Length: 324
Ligand code: AVI
Image 1 (cartoon, protein in one colour):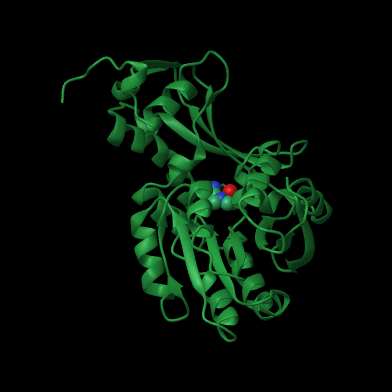
Image 2 (spheres, protein in one colour):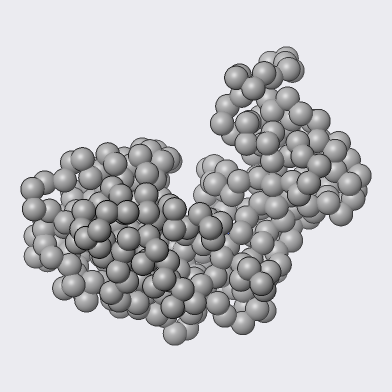
């Protein structure tokens, strides 16, 4: 295909966001949701197995330990809606606990068809699986429209994905989820807690370089899908803990002065040596602030289960009566 100048109208959403993030004189940025193409998803699965990255295992342990109590706290019948289900591996235990009393319908929401197919394969033994290929909020809208009379909804937002939002955007997003639910419906929210700084930075800068490959894959994806000419070796992965914002920030630092052409975004982006592209924020939490976040979003936080090995909380939020 020949290189063509793109007009704003001709740009895909990905190309548009790449253009907006890189064609700036200020801090260059790329949205972290574009990490997850097939390669990025496989790399994230590898990250979750790393000894340095305890988050996924902690999430899993808390769920294993609390699923029975969670099922007791919820009134049946319950349908389960999961935001960004991935392969649904953590969810098996929750569905199993709920299904001991009544049959459960499970709506995994994901933009990846492969992930949804995997969910159906893995979870059909404990629930009726109805995959929803959509963005989070559109998916919730669709799933709740299928709710049966007198049925409660349990929404799952696991793995501390909420931490990848800007702090100011978190209540807004949860309010939008709340607006799609009814009073008494539930949200199980996973949040990674603050811990020793050295532990946190190692989790995002592992010695094997898996997280580096995950971060750099974003540039490789731009090359593959948007006709970019990033020389991947000319960028270095960096992860730092921002103490005042209480978040890990991942960046890609240019190793030299260079120009990068991205055909489908219609840009030639200049990079100075040492300049970075900010690719992800991973906010860390304290338990009381999760309760405040819940209240600000129209929920009551009724229970917090915490993993002791890798401080991580699973928070049970119940939609309050007042409309938000
Ligand atoms: C998906 N999300 C919660 C992960 C995190 O820890 O912020 C993504 C990730 N980035 C680097 N390692 C893992």
